Image 1 (tube, rainbow, N blue to C red):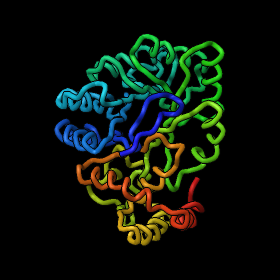
Image 2 (cartoon, rainbow, N blue to C red):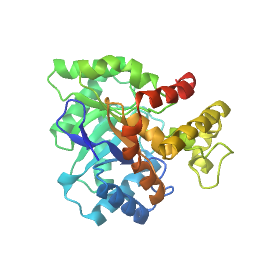
Image 3 (cartoon, helix red, strand yellow):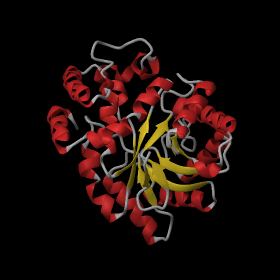
Image 4 (cartoon, rainbow, N blue to C red):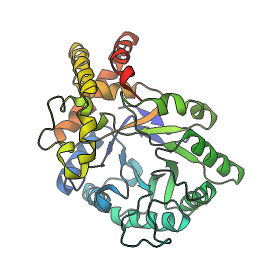
Length: 327
């Protein structure tokens, strides 16, 4: 395992990390989570990603219970959470409106995450989506204040436009506030433009770091959906029914079939090939993996050995297959 700086910060994150979206509480209980966290940690993973909204807060509870059982030194691991959607939707009043980044919500949201995970502070906190109804300055000040209070160490964004990230950074610069350090975008072989084009100026201009999610396009790049939706897969969950059509996209699944021949040549799995392709990008600080089984995690971690095999010739072949289908 290699470690990379998170943007221009001094924080070193493992090039592969472990996330909890969909899996924790829904597919993975505390015992299984503890086993997978331990296996990842033993392989050198030091960053574990979460969010307030995952399983309506239960994902944070599961991860927190696992941390308690593992009894790791707090200096040895990095944990994150993300805020935007909130947990309760009983009220439709203006003050309780969800999908927000206003100060009231953010200051209370971080306290909830700390309690659920049983932590004194969270290393990385993200604005999980942009909020067009709240002035960016209000959000920047709130996130900066959370860091000043010691409840978090670094803050960033997830799926924000380059223009909004730059605006937030410039507000923080102008008012001597804690600046956004990282962005968490979706990035995989079929979803590239934001990372490779839209954010291109931000890497040098403001030192933006990336903690990318969905390296396998929710499982599409493993080849498991080439013949429909298998039982027990992510798309078989009722809560994930909205993604079934895109996972069964004929053109993309045909492309995955072509990628399989390259994976065979390299002696690796499709998942390892897809993860290694992201890992070779020097702009990516860490690739967030997701796994519902220990065997999946071990296979994904095997991408580390594949990364050096991705020669310019191999990358060109991969691009020829996937670039025409990417957005």
